[in-house]
Length: 172
Image 1 (cartoon, rainbow, N blue to C red):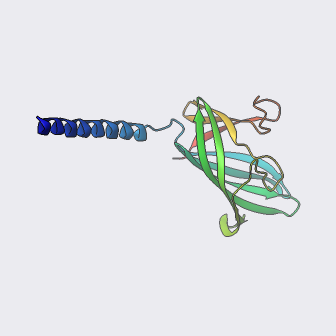
Image 2: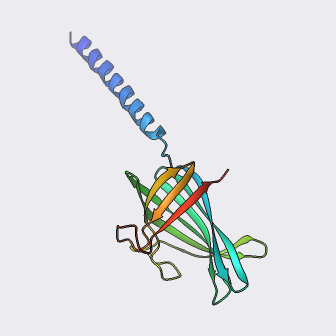
Image 3: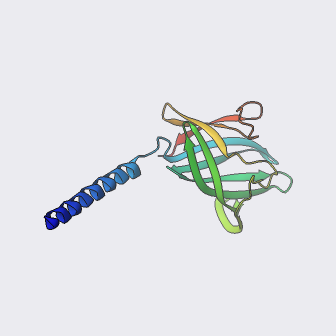
């Protein structure tokens, strides 16, 4: 009788482990609708006219990587940035927790990323080189296959005033 009870316990433990494994597998396979690589272009004034700068963001469930060029007219300098971190999703709100900020020199003629200038772990709230608060909280929607982001630039929670809507296109 004791052997049969032990065998039943082993079988129950095995079935429980199988069910738990299946639940975790299904949970891990869920893909967020915003996953993928997205891009947007901004035209900004430079010392020689306008320049079209490309911003790219790669989202993968709970992580992201954003790369973009900055232009500084005072020094006629281009800087290439790569920010990485975690994404926390609540409803249609995404919060970006920046964990790494890398800055590279950039050659605008050759369109080439050059040597790493700096790598920092930001403090909260982090301030970028232009002394502006970098967006960390956005509302997002999927609209006709595009990723529409409403950035809360001033982090006041109202998505108005200086806030902005950006429409990112998928990168093929």
